[in-house]
Length: 428
Image 1 (cartoon, rainbow, N blue to C red):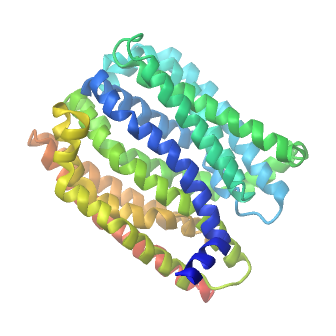
Image 2: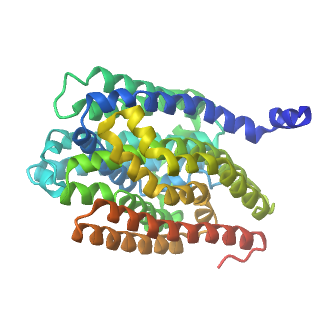
Image 3: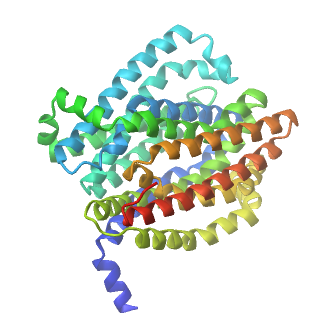
């Protein structure tokens, strides 16, 4: 036991993971602990509107950067990493301005496109959220490159505290669940500003050395990211948000609220662990790969450890979710627990595979990764169409979860194969 403890305390990898998990865990715990209050002061329909708003932001934020931030960790030169970070931020600013004009022109029609007229007052906040979410993501990758894990943890914690405080304090001051959107927007702005302040103090010189010509060259060199990775991420996130958009259009905002809460209760803790491990693990594997060190064995052990870590929590959700949700969040939310039980197998596979998505980028296999997402997207549409035709939300979710489980399982096997081929210099 003593030797195991000594190995833990001396491991840089585990120390870095612990830094992220502890601070980010506090951030996630704060946001989750207030939900038993939020589910009692905001209705399921109001939570549904919030889920719709956040689903839109997730998609626009992906488009805004061309996903160049995914390339930040790859170059060997620090200046090139900084250039890709700045490129991502400037592209998001330009896109957000274009988006603002688009909304100004179509603002009367857009709420009808999504089946929720209460979205109208929040349309002009979408470009603001898009820009600051994109900035936050770009600076996260830069901080990860710098191994600035305390900065990452601090930005996440600050964002969560401010977000939660506003949601609670604004609950009675704004109609139709406006406090939920306001909290998210203020938190997004605060998180990006916290990041910017800390990173500029530490490494502003390298950013000031970047020229427009440098960014133009980097954009051309890493054009695979907007051509394939952006489409990959866009299709992935849009297909994951399909239930929100489809349920909003063909059912009602209350059902969207049930889905949103159930998904969040699994996805938040899952992302806390997988996201923290991924940031440290991806940096380690990329460095090993660039240095010519074999990576397959390390990745395989990582997947097995993640499976062992997640098995018990996911089994608890499968057997007890409806009861636990009712006790903690109130009788009105029983359906969320039922939905959680349905999509738990799918999210378990996401927990195992999502930390390895960087492998496809690392070995320039974005084209096939995008093809897999397209196939998953088409299958998910078919699953939801069947549910809509049968007018049964649960059937739609069962089919959606089933096809997602199968495709994500294939992706996991493929990532492992890529890492094995990378060790022998034969990626196909």
